[in-house]
Image (cartoon, rainbow over all chains, first blue to last red; front, side, top):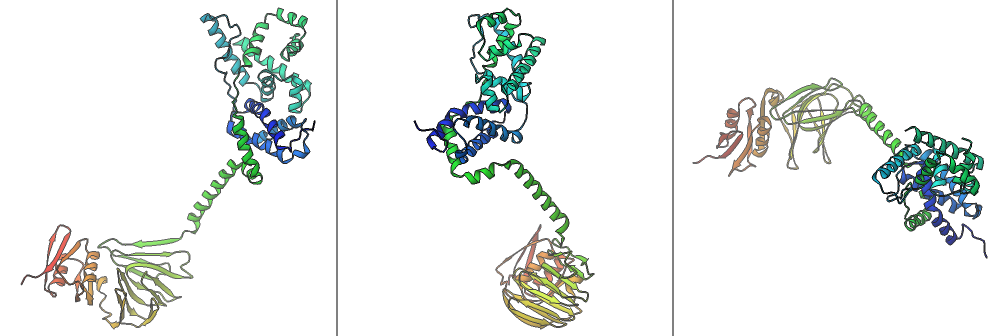
Length: 169
Length: 303
């Protein structure tokens, strides 16, 4: 089997297809400015295409996230992130249809959403990469170029904030 | 919370069963479960992967350009706009030194130029010049008729769309109306340029161009400063131009019926009374007129 290379157009497109959604998710945890985000993501891919010979296929994902992170640093509007739930998302107890239960759950969801929006960017991106994209701490650490310990720290401080906010309200 | 380690393991999907059952005993685990469940349902922007890839393919082909454009282009526009506004406003503040004077129908104006040369502007006329450059370059634009008393100094130039008059220090009158160009010298020597013709005009001489035809140099009475004394005077001038002048001096519209507008008129009219003025024009040419509101009709006498 020949080794995959970013300089091969087919391999590069495969890499692009399997990561564009993921990296867009990642950008949405950091900013609401979708158009600029997509521009910057495209630019990150473009830099990789230009430097394809210097990047191994195995390290490509980590490289992509690092450059997106760097590009985002100064160029994205750092307004408050606004999140929304997917439509028709199921409640935790799908068999309970009583109006009281549904109302209670809606209230909970609302509080949670607010609490997540108020996390720091570092906490939010780690927490949502784990929750939405189902990434393990080790993977997140690799992508963000930080240690697994740091990921766990961010995770637990995020959780702590969410729990206090929800139990207080 | 001492269960923190377990919770982190649980969220990472790596918790052994016995630890999970311990965790589940905790009262607050229900909330934790909800947090874990609902946070994973947050929506992310859906990417049309093939479309994005296509756009990316286009970007790839214009690598060098797109790199430069996407670099902070929004703020570059912002600064460019600010700089343009600054330049434009400072240009108008500091460099726009043009001055202009104009008169309406039936109005004359007397004013001094920056070097104290005197200008008397006849009705329906306009003069403009550059204040700042005046010291070095006595140059002005005239449309209409004006009398100049020029202080001695560097050359003084009156530009009109028909011809150009240059002097050193003198008194003269320039009249430029539609298809009519006339220069009269009251003192000193005036040089008149009309297209390729250059004429030196001495005191008491008049130079006329009517309908693009040079009428040559004739004499006039220098004590007769006609419009300055509220009078217009003509010597063998087609009636058409006399009527134009009448319309400039009085705010009336003149129409004519069955009249030869090219017949020559010698005489003058006052600027103070429309009836006397009309009589002065019509009687010598055996014409009649009527006035209705602001309209005057001139027609041939019935025999």
